[in-house]
Image (cartoon, rainbow, N blue to C red):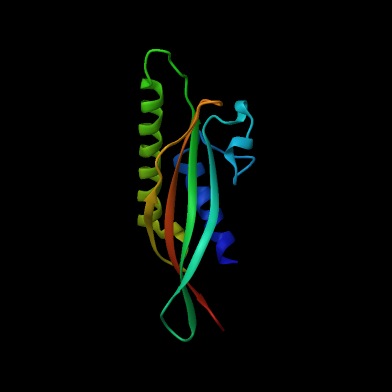
Length: 146
């Protein structure tokens, strides 16, 4: 089905563009990933979808997909420079991913448009020394009804 195709295509793009990232064992609650597995992980989660008016022979949907990138950082007692650097690095990784998804539309003929709706504020887990950013992508696709 199209949702699985989109998730697979996003995953292929992450593996190609950001090869140091590994898929999280727990994608819906990143805090459940153990500390050693929390370095450079990603999660892809389909979210809500809404119908877009269009042809009577096809269903057109705007579907949100969240892509979360997370990485470990080394805390310092005198500053948070390592955390700042990690946040900027993840922002750059999200930008690289967005450019590729936007330009190639995931390489799927059914996908019409890919855009970033929102990039979250950093989610900092001081207990595990990790930081995560989530980009919400809106993907418009068309699916034939016949």
